[in-house]
Length: 444
Image (tube, rainbow, N blue to C red; front, side):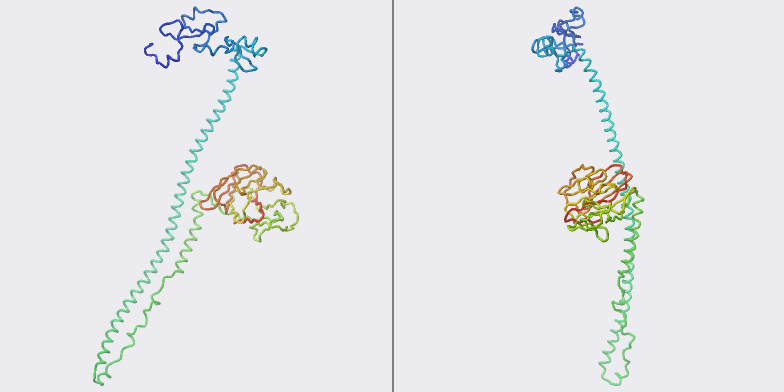
């Protein structure tokens, strides 16, 4: 047995102090600083001062470094294991102490509570890991499904465009063939006339060489019927580009009409723009609203509009329309503004205060995206920085009311997602705009 015992196992096992060769110890005595197998342990002193522990070779770690006595107590005030001398005359004199086994049991109880809490955290972490794994699997399936639907959509698009192209090119070929055939017929006819004219010219030349006047006068003159009266390029016809353009236009219009149906068939959201108009009753007097109610421009001269309850004291304006359900999409041109602040606001948002609490995104009634040197999203006066390496000229805003999602997109090449708020909307929402000095924003 000793021959086959692994070296690692031998190193970990503590040998009986009194056995030779090696016999594993079952207990060690801290007072005797010796280890015993079952045989020698039966003869060991049974006195309480002879403290038995699990087999060990590190007896010094179980003695006080100052008094060299066995560590028997636990100081609850200093959280330290101490000997009798430490408690009676040492630095722990008068402190509250417990026996090591009592303190150990109490610590085990605490560790059980901590372990139970950690197990709960572990289970929660495992649940999150499973949820993330399931989410990754779900998103992979969704990505595969979207890839399939996109492929099918563009296959349908190519098929329809190919049909339009085929019809237009067929008409071009038909016209070209017709013109070509007409030209061939005319050339053939003209060639025949040319040969007849050559023959007549030869006859005329022969007559001109006759010296007898009587003979010359008896010869007939050339007939008018062999002189070409037609065969000009204008008679050959031209490609009717107007008709081709009409076919192309009608084909593309039909394709545009059918494209919406294709997208719906492949379960893609048709993001039609909502007709957003600015509500002049809500516009601050430092904001000029265009006649078409699409643009808002800062002015240094007050517009002196009446102070109705709807009007903002801060430089803001909201839309006439409100959204309490469904999906809505609009685009905002911010190229005329160095700084801008746009988003959505609930009808009950504060309007009669000019401070931060009335700004879009700086309260719990609104959500916004703003550009002031740095791009930020704002809600409840909490900002989140958004990385953007390019100048933003146009912003697309997509509201999914029931889903509780408000998304902002940078509309350039390529289109880039900037930020999405996820919440539960409880009030009707308006498109909202803050207009900075020397700035103009426009709804596209």
